[in-house]
Image (spheres, each protein chain N blue to C red):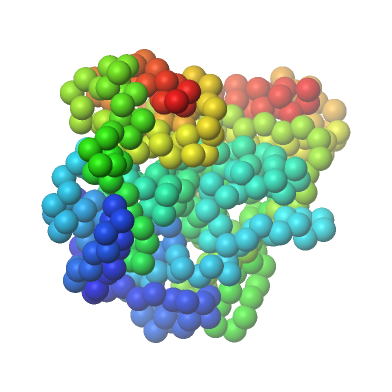
Length: 273
Length: 151
């Protein structure tokens, strides 16, 4: 399969990329690692007339210890996140979840910013960064603004990014305490049928669900129940309270709801150990 | 658009459409047909090549993205008619049946050993999750990679 015809321009800086998306508008898409966009283009589910290649903007590939949080450049590859000693030490849930994205070949090319901006609820990192209370820094023609992960996901493949903005940095609070990432799928490299990213530190917790609706879902009822003293078994019964899972060829809505409860229980048990 | 890609140590330069995939550049422009197209959806890994030394799926990369980079294909693995130790290990351990997945398996396995020189059997199974063998010959593929790691 070959994508439909398009033109390609290379941006050497975020500012240049933003100027180009301003110029070409709806016709243009940003190309980072391409591992979400190119498959869609081959299937003709996306047919941008202009691709703006941002993959060579090397100053957006970094991982920094920024005190209370870790700052990750949007063009940092999955393989660099999963192996980063800073991420492994301060946000091990993110390093571990990243190691479950696709396969090694995909992680050599795909970027954290590309995965988040694609806003696919079936991807591992939107839910993981949501559970961790991350903030995304986006840049537009008039400068930068911050968007909390909780405000970023608007619908299926829809985010709060304006058409002339690009994601430039992901800020993930450092975590202490237990954590777990549960991914249930049929083949090793597949998207999760349901996934759970969770951390817990005493009464505080964060639990988010992969592929349980059109957006990644923060399971706030689970965290509220734990904070008010509920057992793991009681809290995990509320796993799907915020979710509206779809039915597809892999699983019915009811099965997904069942899976979410089981996986949230396992995730909380592992986080509490 | 013009791309310059070093393939198996040789500089190449061609005018391509922006939509040209790296695998088509390798197979159709350069006529290096050792790299296979299997699923064409970045699932099966048959098209795995090295881009700047790392395994990637060439069906999901534009030739334009590889401009200025170095690519190694299965044809670039043997030196002076002598097979790469990984190829040798696949031969000695019956790591191939129909052989369709083999170029991608070899390229992925060499990249895996670069990142983890002393892998366990589990490390290999997880490390090769992006490569599918429709003969289901995984056991001997894993044995081949274990054998190559010991060389």
